[in-house]
Image (tube, rainbow, N blue to C red):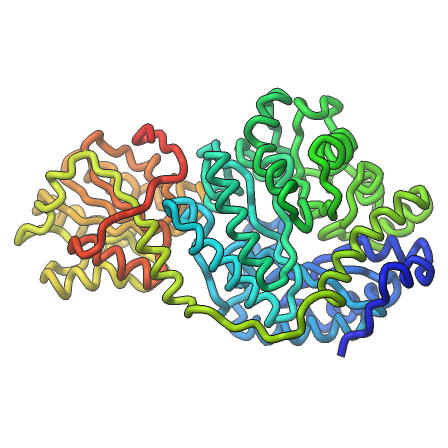
Length: 536
């Protein structure tokens, strides 16, 4: 049973300045923490009146180790653990905590054995059916609320116009500002229908970068005019329509602030642009403050938090120095600034704990059926020579796939229905596969990149990639890509190469891809980003 949330009017008189500042902090909490670490968080919540928490899977997979080598422990009981920890932390709080998580494609982004929905880039391929995206937002919101999570730190509204982007890429709806806007709006409306809070991110726009802000500070060298015309466009329009929060990324944007300050600590960007120019009146939340783009610039504990607050930040996400940050802000900030931020955060709490309907939400269609419908509307053809496609179904073609972590339903179905033995390409089978390739002119390649991110060539071993590129240069290859479309840029495709982008490796997507191969399903998607390979 949660403690009662007082109204803002009551809380304004009841809480001390230090308690109000405590409400502005959102430390990270982890599913796989030890009992000692859990108890420490409980003490922090009790002692410093923490206002919110943000769940991550484990310390090994948290922001600064995003591309690290620490072992991430698999925990098949993560969902039950999530609910147990939420209950414990809420009991430690004097006032109900706002519980947040990054659930851009569902709780599965952080929690094993939970519903997973397609990445934003997949939704970006859907043409003219934003109801499906609305349903994704709604289903994710239902899953969050059922678990006790109130705040989905999503959607990403960055316009991904840099193929080398190491951290946004597949998390963006695409590289067209208008399409990013309408798809983000549909997703938000779906969440709103349930009552889950949102946060559009990563202001002022993390799309055109080639540096991962978990590890370094990206620089966006664009003029103020260009930024307002493109990167800031979705933010401006969505703010007009109403959003709960805007998350500020760790970015150096000289066109908006030439002082060298990252956006996280820039009053010119947070106060002047976001508050004044764009008129945003809601909660401004930081991206994770432990990320190296900003954390390494402030050696004194609490200094980063104080600087971010001074610049106009309301909520300090993933502060590793909450105690020192609270003390420093309480000692240095004006009473008005503290009160303004406290009021904005408390109004979010009122929306969840005082205004939200207590009625059970009716669950919509099954997750599997929703994912199947998305597959049907998103699968995309990039045919260099469509007349060649039917030739792949001659009596002899090579049924080949790249070794993958998920079950390969697609190639197995081809083997069953067409009688072509499924061959798997990996480092240990290269010699054998080369012999098989030499015997065939037509090859159907099911490509399952190991990684959704471009780092290390999407996880494809150099020797394996060499086999694929040589095969493409000499043979007629029909590729079904179950992954990030940017992976096509490393394959050295020919002008007449034939490719079908399936985007996801979910069973439903693989099944629909096979229906496309048999011509039962017509591809209806359109590539939402520009690839160097095709110039589209």
